[in-house]
Image 1 (cartoon, rainbow, N blue to C red):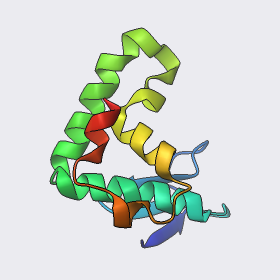
Image 2: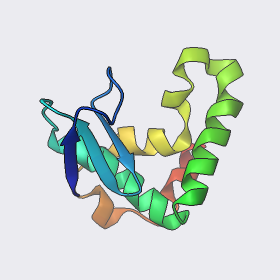
Image 3: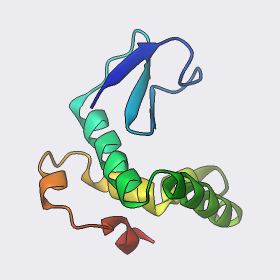
Image 4: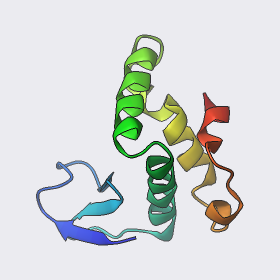
Length: 105
């Protein structure tokens, strides 16, 4: 995964953001293998959902979960749950089945 270090994206307070398969990281931050794996899982999800539908689904699910989870809605998005649960498994992407995030809904 290509990592682009800069001082603009992501916003202050965030370490990294994956945009269309490119990982943007705050200049001066250390990006661990687990973060790269987490974001690589998102890239696999993006490819499955043809990128645009990944972002549409992500925002829609966040909005749906917002009333129940409030400030924790982000952590309860199925796409995030798959990435967080499996970010420490280096072999996950080799073993992962297509649309695996569905079981985290």
